[in-house]
Amino acid sequence: MGERLWGQPVRATLAELKEPVHMVDIFRRSEDLPGHLDDLLAMRPLPRVVWFQLGIRNAEVAARLDFAGISVIQDRCTLADHDAMRIGPVGPGPRR
Image: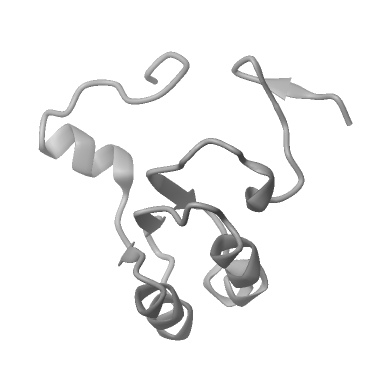
């Protein structure tokens, strides 16, 4: 409790975030994703994109998110895509 990262307090759930979030980047095992679905859907406003990192796929969770109006990207690495598209650093902290 009280821990901070990048100058922001660590939160227990995504729904505790009060600022709009464009993208949620998921680093969880595929079989663990259903346990995070309610937390994702409780966010207000909903994120525009939920990104499952390389090797992570779950068709049922993706379908529920899509039905809620959230775009889902599965089994892709955000860093590799940023590098391939020559997109500069994004977000707080140093890049690599």
